[in-house]
Image (cartoon, rainbow, N blue to C red; front, side, top):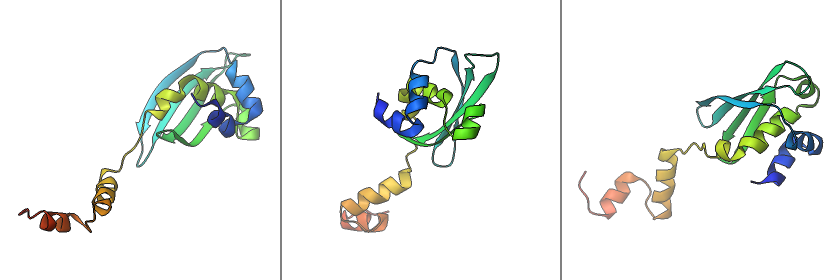
Length: 128
C-alpha cells in the first residue's frame, strides 16, 4: 500500500485520524462511469449514530476525486472518513481500471509503424 500517495490526497490531519479510525466501513456499490469508476461506502461515525456516505472516483491507481457528506468535509474538502476508506480499501479500489481498447489498439499500431488498421493489413499482405 502506498501510504504516501494517500497522505498526499487527504492531508496529514485526516490521514492520521483515518489511520486509527475504528468504526465500521461498508462498501455499498461500484459503478462504471464513462472512463472511470465510482465507489460508494457507508462509514459509521465514531461519536454518534450518524452514517456518512463516502464516494471515491478512480481509474486504476489514480484517485480522480472523492467526497463525504460529513461536516468536516463540507469545511475542509477532506476528512478522516475518506482517509479511512482509502487506507482500508485502496488496493481493491485501484484494481478497477478503465482501459480504452480502441485507443490502446491505435497506440500499438503506431508503435509498430502502422498508420491505421488498413495500413497494417496491407503491409502484412492480408486481405480483408
